Length: 337
Image (tube, rainbow, N blue to C red):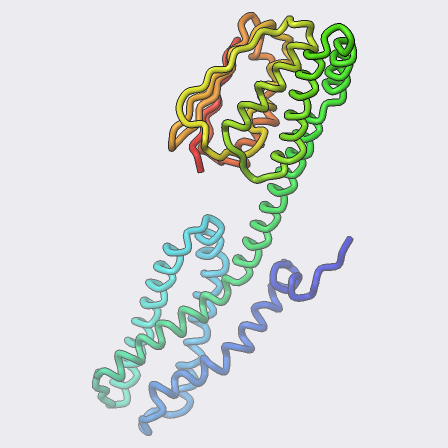
């Protein structure tokens, strides 16, 4: 097992929680003790012990808000991605804290008979304090953000691995040795009796392999090319089955749209595993969506397993796909990216 870097363990390990708070105190205590001097340092009437006592109170209050942020606010909003709501709530809490701080300062000044006027500099000081204390309190969210970053990275890596495995499985399904051997056997049998049929079969096979070897490596291909690949595949499959398979492909709308290669073939291969005698395939495409359907009369498609193909489609299109399955037909619809 690979040993994690110290900073990784320090930021996310529960065993370092106490040390994280100690580090926060070490960094913040000098700042917390120095801040009251900005408020009271110019008044000789206020003794140092009052200033330090007020500073200690600020440190305790900030530690309370920091702990509340680290244990409640950040875990509640940040993992959900509600960053704007988190910032608004944090600003409101900090503003409330600063209001109480201002009231306490005025009471201390009133106790020692000191009057303070509010001017533009005072307003700038309040705004500066709001930003400073918000940043200080929000700094305790770094552990939650770090854990969320790790979780997101793991999720993305898992999705990429899952997508890669699906691509490998689909590639293995496309390069089907049994299909190739059956096609070559058919061509060799017809070599003497029907040379023209052999030539046509080999030409169709070369078109099929060309698509598999070259177009499948691209990110996208024309819908027209994918339909032609399906037509070539079913033509050879029909020959290999002794002309038992009857198929028809209907196309409507635009065919010059770009789609991921081999998008429909895994669905058709799953249907073919049910040994249908007839296939009726149709495509309907426009600028916004592509619809695909496959009807296999007298076949039991409800018992076919389309889960792997649907997972791949979900990785490619997310919630933009709609897949429906009936006893003798399937239908796929997705929005064009």
